[in-house]
Image 1 (tube, rainbow over the protein chains, first blue to last red):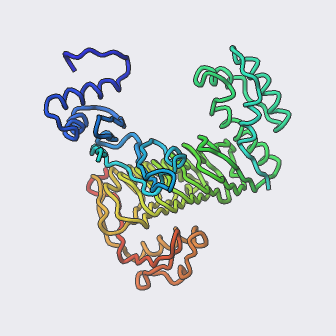
Image 2: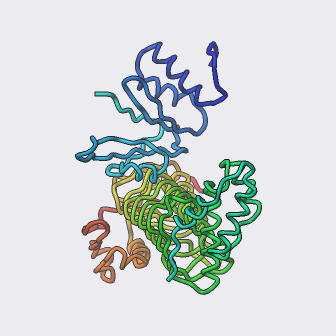
Length: 113
Length: 303
């Protein structure tokens, strides 16, 4: 990516900068994720949040793990979805009611109500 | 019967005062663990733990190594019934490195981490009362696994069929995620759901998905058989065929291993003309294998 200043030596920063640049260009977060998947080469799973969305995205071959699970909630807390790479992490927060694997290359996006 | 509570190891490690070098910490812990379990932790683990995790007491590789050392010792002493408590998704439990199959029934109460039972070579049943992560029974030679929960990617990958082993028999009650039985060279997997690209590059063995139809099964497969519900899609290199009488015999043989685990009451009578089985997994259901098809290598693609 040319013309951008990077502040860390983490390759994850490239994803954030890419997404931000695409949102600035067309304002469509889902399209931005799809564009990243189309352009990126290599295995990855990332979670990216904006002010009104959070998404888990995997490379188009699904070579890196990424799973989501649902916790139906109790009297003490509301229901929620959780994202992780390992089942045991979902288990710790009780988010194992509906476990899904996001389709390779297809962003799974949750929007703020 | 021997019970190993991994939290006991954690408690011992937490009692050791941490030091800036980690060296004294390691020596103290080594002494304590030897007193309690009569096993030694290798010196090489010290630097590996400090370099990767910053200290000794919190390094997962310490618990992996100790767990397997303790179990190996017990097996050598003739123990063949072991329970593990509080695994807390610890990686690589059950990698023992015995050259001959050992007789062992192992029950793990909780979730196991990556590579549970990798390279396994045992007679008996290993049961997980929880979930399993990537690479369950990776490169396994022989043994039977029953996983009560889910398993993530690459269940049974590289299962090894050799002159003296037929691979591992695996039942996953709540289903597997992606690439189940990838590159399997033997073994049998019965699962209630399987994710994308299952059966990838299979060359032998059986993948039987009794759950919902899957996607992109069998890409690049050159051998082995996948049984799955109609509606399952294939990857490049695989073709869908109807079941013939031999398939029913093969299905019967695979399910025979799990006949009691799945409470199958009418397996003896199972055939192409009597294709419905009463199976109780999470719940009771009648599974009609007339709704199934097989996925095998596309001979036009295999050279």
